[in-house]
Amino acid sequence: MNKAILLASVLIASLAAMMAIMTSINTIVSIKEPMYSGSSVCARILRASGIVEDLGCNENTWTNSGKNWTRDCIGQGVCGATAFKYLALGNTSAPSATSTTLAGEIADCGLARASGTYVTETASVGNWTIYYTWTSTCNNEVVNTTAVFNATSGGIMLAGTTITSATLQSSDQLQVNYTKWVS
Image 1: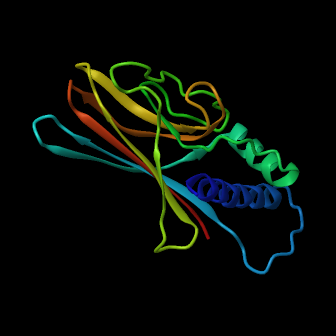
Image 2: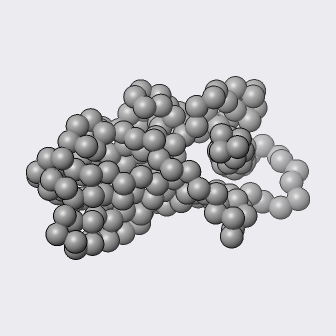
């Protein structure tokens, strides 16, 4: 059941991205109402001492490879079986539209790429969330970027963004919450 909901949500997001692509190349599309999509990423730290630090929210950058995957999924039905639910953390430069990997992706210290939890936001049509909480096992681990992939390693990077730079100590937790919408 969750896989079907996830696939449907990815297809909706894919349709939204395809509509944006079609508009940007001046293709005439006859639709009853316009479709928009968006995504934001919010993060916060739960320090081992019990202090909570809100790192704020940022908009996502859809990568070209993510847009091409969306195009191929909608236009050719080539979607694959793996959902975009794998969240990664990094510690270098901001992802851009041409990024295919997350620069400085962290692969150790309890902060490696992980399968996020998918939740359909039933109170709002077209909204869904993917989130994960990491627990640092090292001291002085800097985190300042995040991205969404469709695999535990490698795979297609759908989108990514920066988060407020934070230095994690052992037993600190970092929560990252991707909220996506189609309207």
